[in-house]
Length: 369
Image 1 (cartoon, rainbow, N blue to C red):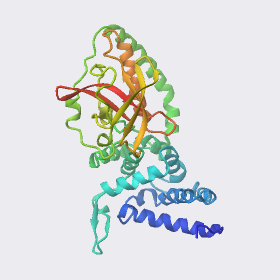
Image 2: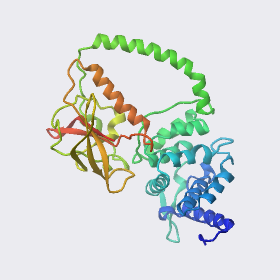
Image 3: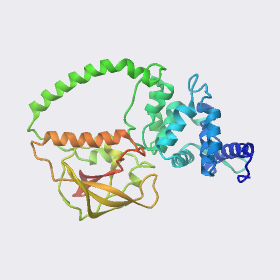
Image 4: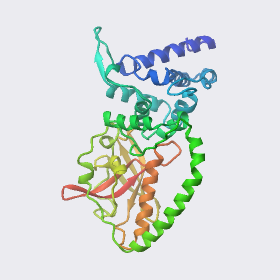
């Protein structure tokens, strides 16, 4: 049937396959989130199916038909396909991000076995909200999508509360930037709110810069004490797509055993990895102010299959006591990379490898992207 030149037949089949595919994805019956997007998910799945079977003209027809069709949830004139699904699809792996979403849904959302012996979703125990839905999709993309959702639909205080609650209710779904939050008390698009707030933010940043300069000058020469990771990671819950699928480095790495004196914050916890799934070569890809970048191979990475070539930045030995500025710049580099999330057009942070001494993790030594 796919080989026929009848566009109408292809269109009808793609609709049927997308409908059935969503309803029975991963062997679980139902679409528990339909009330939020009013089944607009079918449009992006249908688009993906058409591309997958090499019918780009039908895929374009799907976009032309539904790209400007609004839904009334979560708010009036919500364009799910145009403003959310298509940007997520194009930016975070196409078919992969869809597959990740259905996988997370089937393994985390409550289910039960009905009288016919079919496993289906149990909506009776869960209140589906925009915050909950964005949490699941953030897990699929491996980066927080609340800013994208805010730009598409607006973001209220209730959405923030629902988003945080979803993180507590489904802790195995982890991603970059999940500790960040935005609190928008109006249903305006994020772009409008940013336009209003930028002048005030500019003034605040200028004042903050002056304050930071004064503080840094006063504190220069004082040592920043690294915190123990045990207190940070011992109580953290294992993530479905996070630390349990991360890689590590070898024991004979350059600068091995030397300490980078790097302070770990809560937004880095998910990137801390043990040392098992990483092999570094002697090939140097480049050198920078903070260390040397080596060609390496990693496996077991989230969203990737098999062994993957990566670039491993190996830090120099511990920063000197007066290198407060360099230490700060490196921290900013790592944090900015994390907050940028996972994107096809960016060099993504895949993990942070630590030195291990005396039975406990110590300090950051290597980041791989």
